[in-house]
Image 1 (cartoon, one colour):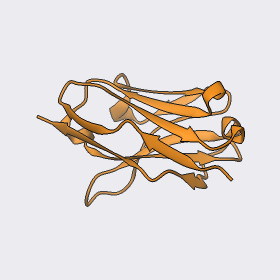
Image 2 (cartoon, helix red, strand yellow; image 1 turned 180 degrees about the horizontal axis):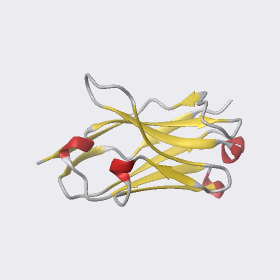
Image 3 (cartoon, helix red, strand yellow; image 1 turned 135 degrees about the vertical axis):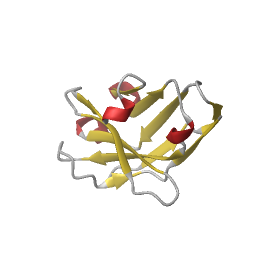
Length: 118
């Protein structure tokens, strides 16, 4: 079993940056697909980005060019670098993992709040 803990959220001005971290409890995390999702109040959970165990990445169109997903196997950690933040990026951001290497996410973190002010 893999436990995930997100951190790095907070309050930031529009145009600013944040780096979210997803720390995993064990090294098996490194063979998982890892994804970031977000959910704003009253809205459905939205896919943000994912990275495979091979390092391939996929981004939602609205995040391309602003967000970067990465992972550090030595640290059992995945990251989401968010630049040029906009108020519409305000949401709870969740880390998720699929131990099969696909996109059927089994493990989820508790979420970290990102608030972007104008």
